[in-house]
Length: 136
View 1 (tube, rainbow, N blue to C red):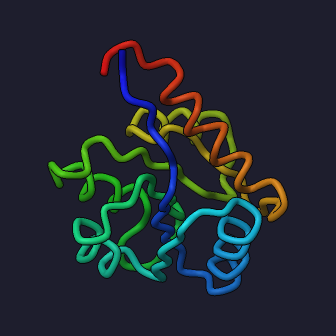
View 2 (view 1 turned 45 degrees about the vertical axis):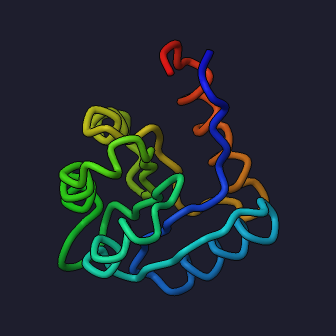
């Protein structure tokens, strides 16, 4: 029997202030999650172990370090090996989505997203990840 995993905190990284504001509002006010927002990957990576979020949402296209490189860096942090990552992107071609999933993301949220359903999308991906888990 495995312990039930509960999604409480989300670390969100996006370089667009409007997206951060809307997603933060949607996830906290509509979804009831604790959200920690970062406008760049470097700061997020520096603080992620201290914050230990239940989930990480990464924008794919960011200056300096994009979401793919950020995920690669996060994968090198042993304490985060169990933390699921979702990519958020306007690039929604099938081959792009397959690539993101192959890199280890549990899902992709399309931009622009609906603020009223964002937390539902996030919870669906969370539940899909953990409902299919047979081992503890």
